[in-house]
Length: 327
Image (cartoon, rainbow, N blue to C red; front, side, top):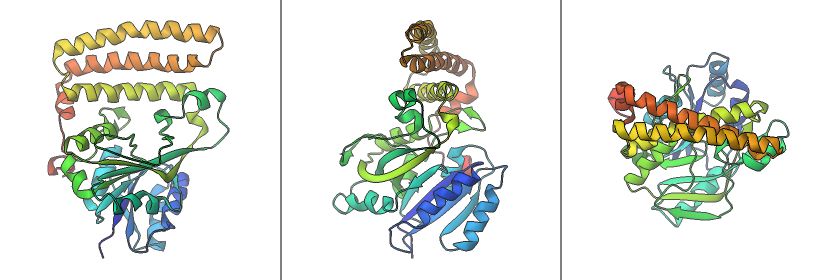
């Protein structure tokens, strides 16, 4: 019997978290035989493969082990999608814990709205330690991959705030869009990942849905509750945003130089605001320190784009499921 949905879990060096993720999906309140779980080891160096093998032996018809040597989460997700059997693909990460009724509630609206092509829901935090106040005030958002909106159901022809840690896509629609774009690839941020996919999905006419009672929890370790992490996260977002702008048409040399210069001008402004709020002991300084990193990275990435022809060609690629990119 063809599974209704293939759950795809890319994983890299998170053997302990991975167990919690897999356990939460193994015992979903969803009909037996209607889903499979593809676990893709993205060239881990810890005991991740042993963990996957153990689960595959215990649940031979449910857990499908995959190995992807090429470093990069888009490789892991796209390779898994090519091997998935389900009519729907559900993407999540190896640091997530699903509510037992996540799948049931996520797909329930499809009975009334069969035109839905892309689904997501709430992403709530699961803190390893109590977070500092400034994290609660400023970072319960996409910078920690959290989705806290309160609507019960949204149906839209545009992205409703989809993150790849809680995202279901009809398989044929996913393939027509060309799969996930690169993002963090071998430690370097080179593309716009899930954002790029959402834009491509909009272009092929996909209908998005947000299902408020379909909930997953993001395990957030203490290491992500620091200024250093936030600075890096903003810098990564800058690389992603620069790629999206480039792909949207801002790709000629003069436009890149102009934009890079404007972001360089913003940097000392953010620096001044950061120091101002820091002097006042106002928690907003954390955000403006991170925005300083964002502006510097936007400048660097746009300058890199001017001189790196190979990177330019890579960013113009749409089909990451083709034989050329997955041969």
